[in-house]
Length: 231
Image 1 (cartoon, rainbow, N blue to C red):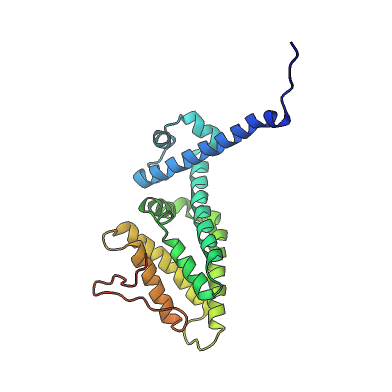
Image 2: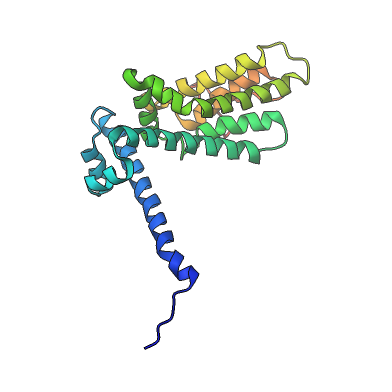
């Protein structure tokens, strides 16, 4: 019987499916690593704990990542890129003014998909690793530096409009980074006292104090919760 040669699209389809399957498997393992670190910490996370969360074999983990350290570093980079892409999209989608863009970056830090106790636990687990802290910082420094630079430029733009008597742009941008880290730690450690809306209101209050002509001060009740509907 004569045979029909497969079309070029048919020949490409299996490779495409294999590529998609590889990406799905890698994401499954990264998600499982996040779950494992959140529950067991980095020291307690092993290839076995990851495979238990993922429902996959150790051979699959070894095939995709070769070692626990590679898996840890890929997980950290996944979180860093996810965070970067989210605040960058918020920045680009915000209004034309520098104050709106700056507040969009603030709000993006505390988005429910980004600021979860599970992911915060993983971030702080990485930075608690004294032996590899420098390596982990090297992996994400460029991403952090980009956000710092964007925030500094926005602050400088606001200051450039005049009548500013507060700190310089560089100092404000560094203070924002410190507030992000400190308030996220509070959300992780004391969830009954710190929430995402409260976090956004606190940072808006700081920015309102240094840019009173451009950013409105949130209204707080006697318990320190925002009454301005920030969510």
